[in-house]
Amino acid sequence: MALAGMADYQAQIFLKDWASKGQEPSPRAWAVAQAAAHRAVDLYPTPNGEYLDRLGRVYSWQQFTQPYGSAEAQASRQAALDSYRAATQARPTWPQTWARLAHTKLQLAQFDDEFRQALAQANELGPTRIMVQREVMTVAFAAWPQLNASGRERMLQSARFNVAYGPRDAQYTQALAAQHGLTDTLCNSLDTSLKATRKLCQ
Image 1 (cartoon, rainbow, N blue to C red):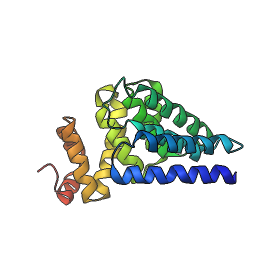
Image 2: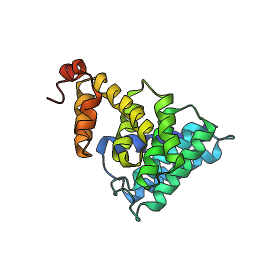
Image 3: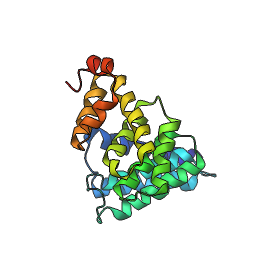
């Protein structure tokens, strides 16, 4: 377990570095991080949801700038998906992993029952967690045509939470809606006082 923890810590360092730079890692850095994340998973005596989630994140970073449905990124995204699936089995109540699973399904252009379940689970298990709700909204707006009426309404609840959370999140939400041609949909879902407070839809 101690060796697993050391390997996981090494993977964490790489992930923090990539996040701070916002760039795909070099092949060498990614290989080192992937090996460390795998060691953490393999050395732990039982399935560890946190370590499996971390392994999924390493795979997600490998080609994260590739467009949705990219054939080039298919293998890394499928590996990320498999890791997130295992993580949700080991720790089914952690909303961030469900959100990452849904995001990976979006990247793979797999709009099936698993995608919808993951999005719903993330939303229901993390209703007040801004990082979860931000990712839920990001995925939902990108996949809007694939959602049914009830799914869209649940996702608009997430959007309203993001708008109410703070000015920066409100601006991000409006920009994201505009990017996907959903400005009117968003604005029509917000009450007048919230729009006035956040200076949106004016």
